[in-house]
Image 1 (cartoon, rainbow, N blue to C red):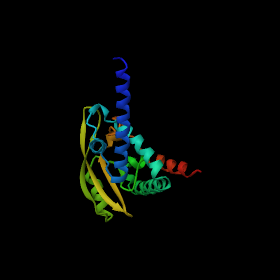
Image 2: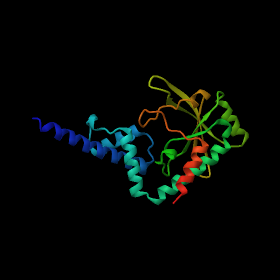
Image 3: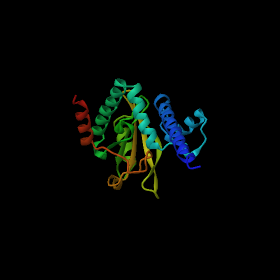
Image 4: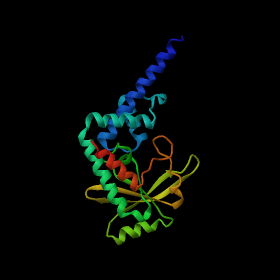
Length: 209
């Protein structure tokens, strides 16, 4: 009787591992950005319907890093650097809005489908739209829901545009949000963000052999 419990726990861990790696493969190869969608599709494909076996988002992110290291190699590194350098240029251009780099381009899990995601800060959200219009940059408006903490969420205005064949997503938050990052959809902890100075340092460190 007591032997069954460790066996069941091991079996559950194995299924979580398989699901995490299948979800990571789907994200890497199909351009899926939503962790929940990726794990649901993985569960369907593997025929696993036990909710206890569903991996955490952070487990999928770890599996995604491993997948990219094994199957993308140098190509992934080139794609990542290209997007980080593009982020640097965009942040210099948008410096008046105290930009912060977020998401896969900062985390190192970006692929050919990943947009460059920036958080901009202004109490007048329309200021970003006016700035883009003044510089002749066509953009599409969206709304992105972000969790400020475990109790509060906000529907933040966002603008999407394309520059040099790369997709950019600008999410505009009030100045107060500079002090406290929204929660990450990966692990429910404050989202990692990088200022322009921090991004320059990251690029410089990556260039050192």
